[in-house]
Image 1: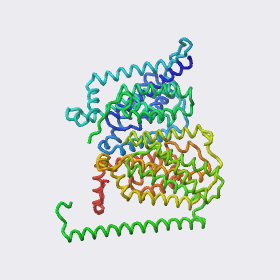
Image 2: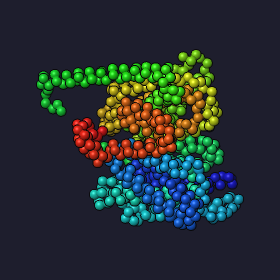
Image 3: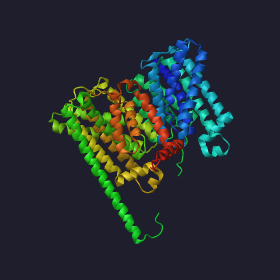
Image 4: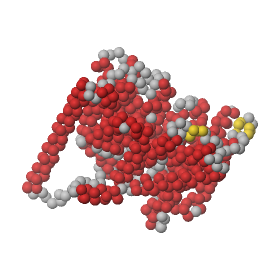
Length: 292
Length: 340
């Protein structure tokens, strides 16, 4: 029972990180209709920024967080401007291959700059955990969960209440019609990438505080799993990304404990295939008619 | 074009141009066959005289393997127009099936090895069907991510099984792969895929690429042709895997990761999606490049990634297309079709 609760908490912890990354995927997919393969690698860039700012230069925690977010945000927006914007009317295949190219570019640049060895990143979270009815609750879990909840509330308010949020919804619904209504599609897409990448930076910081090591390929697997989470929840749906992320995190940590560590990834990907087979729109996704 | 009734002379001209096109096609085929045989003879002469050296002849089999992988992936990416990120998965299934067969069967090599190639290919093809049936209801990004997931599932399953040797790898494989076998296998791959692409079925496949909805409306069985392309591509990827296993004499699940799939994709994209000669040339260049430019080996992946991005941007950006036309005009090259 105690182990079950601890694993559930671990799963929630991991799942919140997945949910934050999945939000970036799902927002970009909803608005730009593209799978941003490089999204996972932005986490890696965030983690390396954290390594340099926190462990090397000894900046205070709030400065590190700010620096990470700004760098990831700028990186995300510039990737969109340089690589994806010229391809807006191209076939999905072209865009996807470009995104894979960008992802590889980030990975191999990190490999050249930092080397292939994994490096230790000091956790920013200094809060002590406590024990509750014999269940250990770590400081990392408390911070991760509360940060995720706050971000999700803020994001929902942003989408519902602000002009830019409404513009995002409009563009994701129908790009052409939104443009006719006077929505600036280009700046809306840039804003989406900015928000998605900033969320990835936060996710990277939280991921690093729990796992502690960064290498050039750190971002790719959590990135792909977060995409699975986004699909599980229904791509394009923001509550779906949250739900999918948390479910996936719990499933993964349960599979690791009770089935097999080796097969945990296979189970996660198996879920993706099963979901796409029986409910391609995900748990909370809307059905979309295919128009000719 | 032909709204009004064609006159007799027009019909004659049409027939003549068709005849000319057929002749041209036949000439091309004859040229390709001669080129294929000549390359085989030249390589064999170079090996037997030792002009290539040990290192050079060691690269010939990987070149053939990469040609098989690239040409088969090109069928999916270039002609069917879907992205498969699990080609390494098909390759690994085939490799393990074929290598386990040669380890456990005690037949003479001449029978055993071709049989292993076929078994490897068929096993991969079966997996092509297994993954294909659910995945092919999807398209675009979803299909790409499912093939990726499939590749990762295969890798972790092979990693955790006992009879595959687990993470330590499968050892004790005989080194059956030599240049002749690899070359013949690569040739069979090319011939089968070229003929498929130029046939009625190939036209159905390219129709699906160009517009899936109108292809379906024309009565093309989209699911069947998608499945057919996946199965054929998987078969040759599996056979290439068997060659790979019998070339290195050891198989490790880590080799067949996502990066391997991307490497094959890089070959296809660089050679030109939908161009089989392009895939062949790119496979040769990409296999040789790291050996020739050893100093640049650290930068290999960086160069690949930049090449991917630049290729995609240049192939679909209108500005660049205009620029290319201008350069062509200045150089006096008359108009080939600029935008694909």
